[in-house]
Length: 152
Image 1: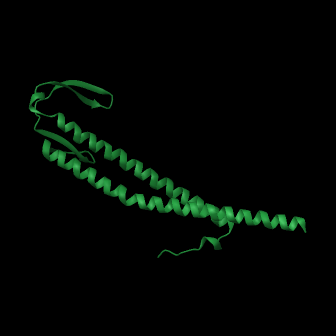
Image 2: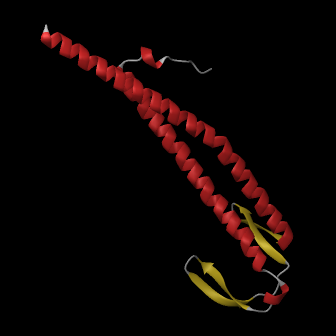
Image 3: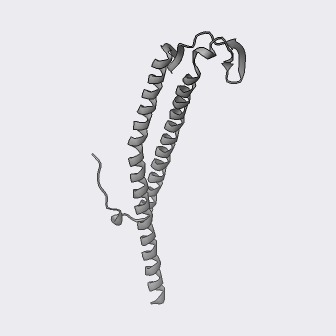
């Protein structure tokens, strides 16, 4: 169970530690959102590529990737079915319409995941801002205390 701590009760070193922890959490959440958006974009692009599959393109020449940098010439023979990478090296043959639905579900799922992470990221940013403000106040208090003792 999470324990609530009043940041006004923390010392400056404790605030610095908390700020460091919040920095890491903000970085992790930001990175997670960025990665989800990259994957989401790939699914959107894949779905859009399916729109080019139509009867008028059947029999046309295409370049088939063998590796990420090597392609061989081929011919587009079947425009009604595609192989969809469903993860971990498995491919499933689907109709073009079923593949579009599959990609739409994936995009919707990723959108929901991003929407779940976004509030947590905003909360961490707000907490970090509050900690930084409290650190500033504590530093100002220390400066004032030292100025007061040096005058006396």
